[in-house]
Length: 293
Image (cartoon, rainbow, N blue to C red; front, side, top):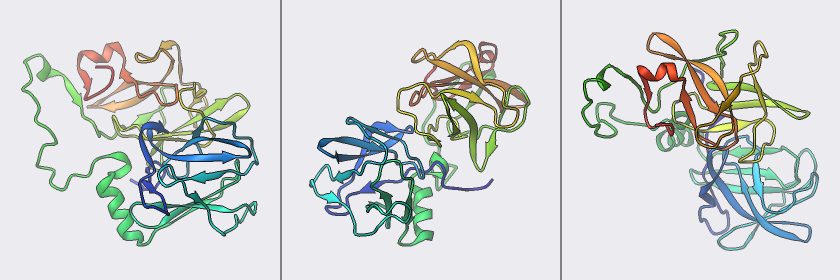
């Protein structure tokens, strides 16, 4: 399987005081966000940036007009974070943020400019540490696979006949219409239509790993938009279907379980982690640690 950085979440610290800037409680792209103080013109507020590599999503409690220049400050030491380096695209100044594993990521200070770059101190060491600490695309790294992650209670006779899809299971995912694979470069790829905007949604293909990324900005807790297969372009939203957690619309994919294919439902609201199987499949399949159970 091809490995990439699409859904890896980077941990960031202040380049001035060295304290972590991560906010574990406020998620963006279903991952801990980077929390900073922000100043745009005469307005001050708080911004939560996505920590997912190459994602431009964020949450901010003040207006963020396109092409305006922002200033970012550490939430701990109140120091402004800036550099003398100019953006190669728009010539605004770049904002450097340190990576906890060594190196830094620089982002442009102009809202709407997508210029950024990552520098690792030691790329091979950084890559190993990412996979040791975070796991491959969110999957936990286990040095000795013979050691169970947790003790499970004994199953009763009925449960022994039920297949358990365990957390971290790689989901071979297909379009329910054309039956072609929705996997591309290690992620589940779907097309989004949101008003006049068109883009892609990338999801982790591992069960109960909720890392995600969109190529267009979608605010947290909002409806993502209409979802389509990127092969046949047919819609994936289920007519009349509702999320079992928040009541939003849901989309249907097909995943492989044991020796057959089953319907797999996901919520279409940004940030909601609900997912589940069809009622027909619940007789002999369970999802380990799913929010639906």
